[in-house]
Image 1 (cartoon, helix red, strand yellow):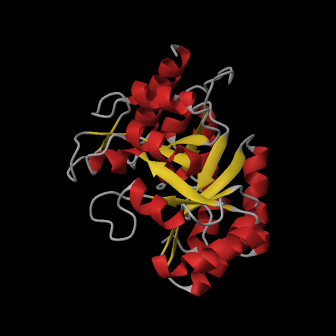
Image 2 (image 1 turned 90 degrees about the vertical axis):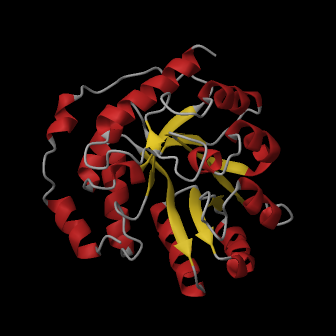
Amino acid sequence: MTKRRDFFKYTAAAAVVGSIHALPKIVFSDEMPLTLGMASYTLRKFSLPDCLKMTARLGLNKIAFKSFHLPLESSRDEILAAVKMVKEAGLDLYGAGVIYMQNEKQVDQAFAYCQAAGVQVMIGVPNHELLDLVEEKAKSFDLIVAIHNHGPGDALYPSPESVYRLIEHRDRRLGLCLDVGHTQRIQLDPAVEFEKYHDRIYDLHIKDVSESSPAGNTVEIGRGVIDIPKLIRVLIKYHYQGIVSLEYEKDEDDPLPGAAESIGYLRGVLRNM
């Protein structure tokens, strides 16, 4: 995990990355039926200033921070300083995560962090035995907790169904972050899964994968096996109001070309709906 001292060192003296300046800022009319955003895990190798610049250059204005860009142990003042940077970049910090919660102290920390940052959604992975506490905190803080599925090999939440069955009778602030790539890797159709659980899906990580198996890896959207147009049609059909956040896990040292291709593909699909 990124250490606080490293985070603020990089923030104060961020290197200028050549690829950031190689791509002109993309300007779009956002009169579209879905809102695209950035899951900052995509840009995990980059400082906070560069992460914000790259997100803006992709024509996105919604971002959810992974702890690489705002460490969970940050003080309130440090969080507020980072939030100010986001606003000055013309972006909206709508979410935080994925945040893992394995004990009560981590639950307390996660909710205090999200409250200080002013986010609307926590993308989280709480241990099952902590769900009562998470539900209580979600009500107290009036915060949406979108539990993230992680596909094959995940003992807690491998599938959307594994999340839904544990939260369907709980407070409606508890829901899902549907990761479409991990869903496909467990040999489930993300569009079908969205239809099943749409009433409790509050965030969505969009990506494409090379195959429908645990061996599937992230590829540029449109080059993999996920039926993206089908998924988009279903999101529109059910009037999905959350953010469709790009989580491009490939090319961590140079993600901008693949991220731009992926966002361009999504924009093209949306314009033809």
